Amino acid sequence: MMKKYLVLLVLIFAFLFNMSPALAVTSSTVATQQSAVNQLKQEIEQLDAQSTDLEKKINDLNKNINQTAQDLLKAQQEEQKQKEQGEARLRATYMYGSEGYLSYLFSARDTSEFISYYDVAKDIIEADNKSSAELKKNREQIQQLQQKLTQQRDSLVQTKKLAEQNIAQKQQTLNANQDVLIQLQNELDNQNLTEATDVGTVSVPQEQQNSVIVQSSTPTVL
Image 1 (spheres, helix red, strand yellow):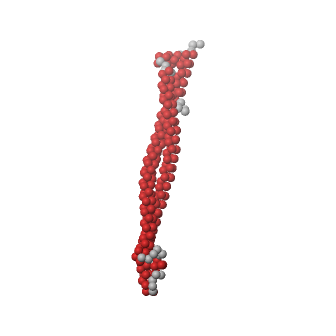
Image 2 (spheres, rainbow, N blue to C red):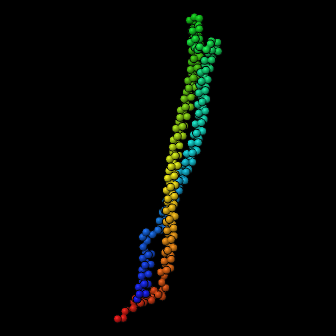
Image 3 (cartoon, rainbow, N blue to C red):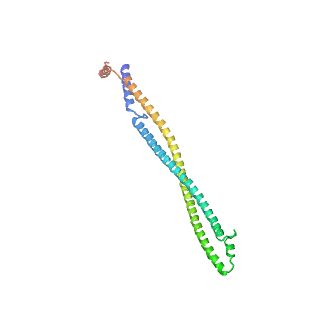
C-alpha cells in the first residue's frame, strides 16, 4: 500500500509541476526582453548617426566662421585704407599740408575760389563718403553673417551635447536590459534543463503504472 501511494504522489507532483508555471521564465518573456534590447540598440544607432551628422555640420560652420573672420578683417582693413586714401588724395591733389578739408577751403583767396574749392572738396567728400558707406555696409554684413554662423554653431553644439547625454543614458539602460536578458535566458535554460531532468526522474515504467492501477482497482478483502 505504501509503495502505491508513493508512486501516486510522484505522479501528482510531476503533473502539478508541469501545469503550474507561476513565476517561471517563459520563452515569451525572453523574447520580449530581447525586443526591448534591440529597440534600444536601434535608438542608440540613430542617435550616433545624428551626433555624427551634427559634428560634421559643426565642423563646416567652424570653417565658415573662420572664413568670415578673415573676410571681416579684410573689410576693416579696406575701410581704414579707404579713409586714409581719401585724406591723402585731397592733400596730394592740391598739395596742401595735412590739416584737412577745412584748411583747404579757407586757403581760397576770394569767394569765387572758395566756391570752386568747395565744389571740388564736396565731390571728393561725397565720393569718399559713398565708398566709406559701401565698405561699412559690407563690414556690417560680414559681422552679421559671422554672428549668425556663430549662433548656428552654438545651437548645434548644444544639440550634440544633448544627443550625447541621451546616448549615455540609453547605453546605461541598454546595459541593464542586456544583463536582465542574460539572466532571463540563463534561468530559462536552467528551468528547461530541470524540467527535462525531472521528467526523466519521475518517469514510471508502464508495467508499474498498470500494476498501480490494478492494485487500486482490486477490492480490499476484509
